[in-house]
Length: 362
Figure 1 (cartoon, rainbow, N blue to C red):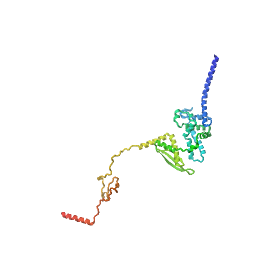
Figure 2: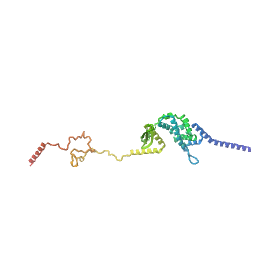
Figure 3: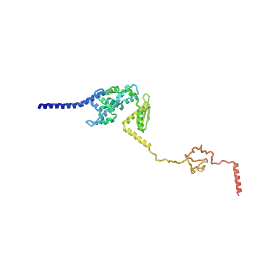
Figure 4: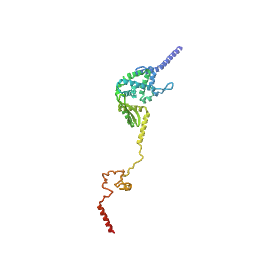
C-alpha cells in the first residue's frame, strides 16, 4: 500500500514536472518561431530578439514597461526611416552613376514610400508577425510599411549599418525589387494631385517662386502648390515640370499625414462657395424703365446764352452724350436754330412793305 502510494506520487510528480516543462517550453517555442521568421526575412538570426519583438508591436496593443512608458514600434520606426533613407540613398547613388540629383531623389522616394514598403512587408510575411488589435489591422493601411521601417531600426541596433545595407541589397533589391524598373517608371504626382482636387471640387494652381542656376550653370526652378488659396509644398527641379512634380509629391504626402491641412482647405472652399452662392438682395424690375423716351420738360433748350449755352443745337440723350444711331436714322444736318441770313435788298424791301402797311392802316 505504501509502495503504491509512493509510485502514484512519483507518477504525479513526473506529470507535474512534464506540465511545468511544457509551460517553460511554450514561450521558448514561440521565441524559436520568431527567430526562424526573422531569419527567413532578414537572412540572419537576431542577437537581441527584444529589438525585433518591439519592432513588431503596434501601438494598438497598449503595453507598457515597468516605468509605465508605452511599448510599441514608433521609436524604432523613426530610427528605421532615417537609416533606410541613408542606405537606399547610398545604393541609388552607386547604382546610377552620373545621374542628376533630381533623378536620384525621385528614385529613392519611390523605393522608400509607404506604399512600396507596405507591399514589401506583405510579400515577406512581415505583416503576419505584427502584434496589434484586429480593428487596427483592418483599418491601418500603413501598418506594414511602418513595421518595415521599425524592422530596419531593429537591424541597425542589433547588428549595425552594414547589416542594414546587406539586408536591403541581398533580400530586397536582389529578390523583390527591380531597381531599374522602379527608377524609370514615371509616377505622375501632378496628375494624382489634380485628380484629387477635381474629385473634391477644390481649386488648385502652381506658382513659380524662383528661378536660379546651380553650380554647373543649369537652370533650377522652384514652384509652390496653392489649393483654395492655401500654400501647400514647394518643389525644385531642372524644369518647370519637374518642380511641379516634386511640389505635387510633397503636397500629396502632406495631405495624407496632416488632417489639419485638409481641414483648412475645405474650410477655405466652404467660405468661397458661400460667397459665390450668396443671393442678391435687390430684385430687378421686370418691366424696366424706358429711359430712351425723352419727356418735353426734359428737353434742353436749343440756345441758352444766359446759362452759357451755345447757339448750336443741343439735344438730351439717355447716356448724356451723342444719341445712338444719330448719323443714320436721326440726322440733324437740315435743322438749324438760326434763320438763314438775308441780303440787304431783301431787308429794305421788307421794311418798305411794313411802312406802307402801317400808313394804310392809319
